[in-house]
Amino acid sequence: MPEIVMPRLADAMEVGTLVRWIARAGAAVRRGDPLAEIEADKTTHTLDAEADGILSIVAQEGETLPVGAVLGTLETPAAEAAAPSAGAPRGTVTTIEPDRGEQQFARRVAEARATIPTITLRTTVDLELAEELLETSGAAAPGITDIIVKAAALALADHPRLNGAYRDARFEQFERVNVAVLMPGPGAPLAPTILDADRKGLAEIAAEARALAGRVAAGTLASPELAGGTFTVWPSPGAGVRSLEPFVTPGQAAALAAGEPEARPVARDGQVVVRRMLDLDLAVDHRVITAPDAAAFLARVRAILEAPLTLTI
Image 1 (cartoon, rainbow, N blue to C red):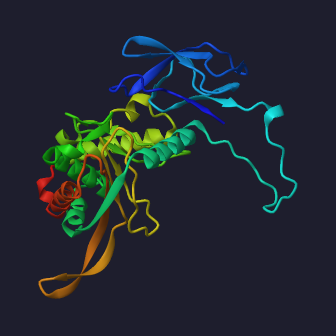
Image 2 (image 1 turned 60 degrees about the horizontal axis):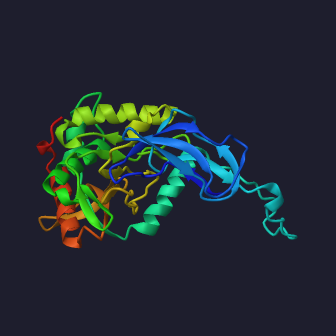
Image 3 (image 1 turned 90 degrees about the vertical axis):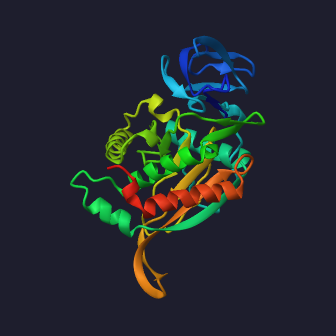
């Protein structure tokens, strides 16, 4: 069924407010009919239907939501629905309607894969010193993800081209380094943002990430906390997964994914030793980021993680 989403009304728009629904829930609307009023940057716009259907409302009046968030759907009238097939080779099929977060995540994945040509680079990091540092940091110690967030933020300051986005055949470079962190939610994962991560200490990043994760799990995350990201970190999904290929979030130029740390045999000074190792995968928008630029950024992240005393606890 067609989704009604928060439109991007200006290049710099990140969020918009649903002022009011013009059409009522359950109303039959035609393509081009006015559905709702949207406010962005103190300007009100009318959102029109892009297809025929029965209006089902998801977002409520007064809500402020990020661009791409699902506001409602246009359902096909029952009389027009396709008749079921005669055979049932798969047995009984149960249709499960995704919730709003799952709809938004699915749309973001599809948009990213369809519109952003990416290349992915991988490197392996020696985590021995980083894990030793964490063990001496006390009860409220940061975790590996917090160190990766901080390392990525510092590397972005050194390689600002990755802290941007391709839009309308031009490249935008962002002044602030705001790292979004993918976190599991009750339904689809969400990526709340740690603002100005390059200027925050590691302990501050860890505390903020824990607070955000708590609100994501409880379903109480505020919409503005999902806005403003300039780069995304994908933590390890666990379960022994060594690596995964992230997608680049629309409106950004790169994303960094971590595998699960593990002990591996490696060569050091002509001998084979066992070290704690971690794979990192960097996906970049190849329209604006070249492979050498991406490699230089990834090498900087690795250097920071392997010399973690450069990080501030």
